[in-house]
Length: 203
Ligand SMILES: [Zn+2]
Image (cartoon, rainbow, N blue to C red):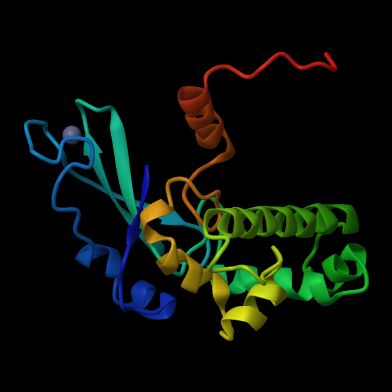
């Protein structure tokens, strides 16, 4: 389970100063009154930026690991939210997703792979922004689910890190890479709260 690590460090400082060492999770989120064998469980590495590690804890009774993800990182996706936002913003401004993918991926990658890479990021970020609009319609009344619309309305250069803070209490419900919920987790919550899916009339 991913949890928010509210740190004042920048992403560069976090890597340089080994900011994961200062991360603290004072009690087990599943057993806040104690009674379990909750303890620190080392760290795991993120590929990008190189050298990044994330602090982790484990509750054996709950069979659950907890990791503290700093606000600047994408959840369940490599890299930072700021870099991701730049990519999606460039795709939005581009005349086509093919042109954006070709311009963004100058490394040794085929164009179809670059397009898949770009399309996935666009889809994930727009879905997350749509969830934000649905969760707080009055606050984001004039926002469309796009990076450019949120940047304009919030008047900040990087909206995704801002939204991570704004939605801090609801990150377990918001889809990654902004929130911490994977598609499977959101589906399971829906099943838990709403019961089984209704029969598909098209099946
Ligand atoms: Zn526990």
